Length: 304
Ligand code: ZN
Image (cartoon, rainbow, N blue to C red; front, side):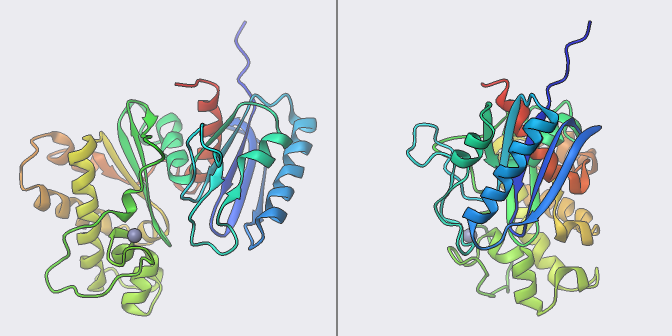
């Protein structure tokens, strides 16, 4: 007799849409619904709560709920605002309690993490980081997010890391002020989709592969990869999101930037002969985000 695979609910809160799904994994999604994130969190969260109650009746019992969200988030389980979205620049969503109302709608073990940590966990469970215990999953889109797994778990301190906002060595001659409303020229401020549009006046997807802006973007992202390699020696660095998806030529540039920046200091195949297998696209494509919420749910069943 085999053990039944638990049915999980996942909620991925994104900047423009929320994806809710119920299932056991990529091969068995029982239902999936998207709804706009909107400007009024109370309305959106109530709609999700109604959906979760329906799914408990239709597909239950539900073993766990996973919520992966844009951040920053309060992940301190002893904090009075655990489960809240905190200092987001997204209008209307600052200091929003997410876990409270959704866990009342679906009273099962609840996992809560960033959207990029969710994507990272999904890649580790089902995608391009299977078999790895330490790796990074980066999304380069409107913003830049980094999901970082070490020892098989997302890295946690008082909260989650925010490596998209590290300060970097700027490329000589690049004096553009940067797009981050908090730091100006952090990685996100110099290389996100918003930064690319600010630098060129055009959307990243509309730019030619040989546009000069890609050198600047690759230089900034190469510095981020340099820091990741030195900080956690990741077995994989997966890069997804709208900007990477639309400009696959960036992978070659990024690998070169990383190697030039490291300057042979690290002697390992992951940043040498096998760099193309290490610095690569995610395996789950656009599904990494929604499946991330299911992966967060699955991890809630096996607490550290
Ligand atoms: Zn920043």
